[in-house]
Length: 184
Image: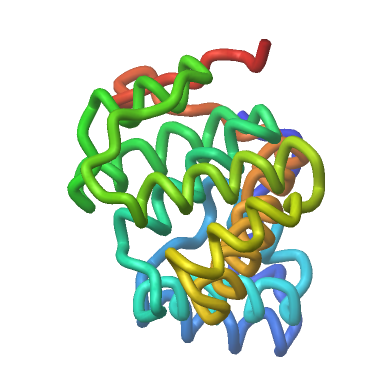
């Protein structure tokens, strides 16, 4: 049960119906999770889905997007997206050890320097709101400005996802592959 009721198509205005029909044809994410809240604003709903589409084909790998998503929804203590992103992260190739380390607030055992650099950048940004000069220089050398820009976008995307899920009041399913541990 959520705090906000899911809108049926018949209760939507013309703009919402247009987005509903397009999303139904694309991926079917309607009427559950954070999508319940997005449906109340056609413009926001559309932007969020465009953003989701971009993350499927950007300079970051799918597993790197999931590293960012897990860190971000963990930061916002958002249980529903954590469970969904954990499942997606496994499918994207992240190991259970990496997912569990993020959940435990430990440094994950990354295989590549790039994945470790993304983790460090995102962690510092979420913890402090900025990067030190040394961190910025390291990220620039290992990732480049395009990936750094898309990392910021991804943090923003999953901040919106996490906060929307929290505001809507959606809870993870009992059979989730991973349940979020509260932040320390």
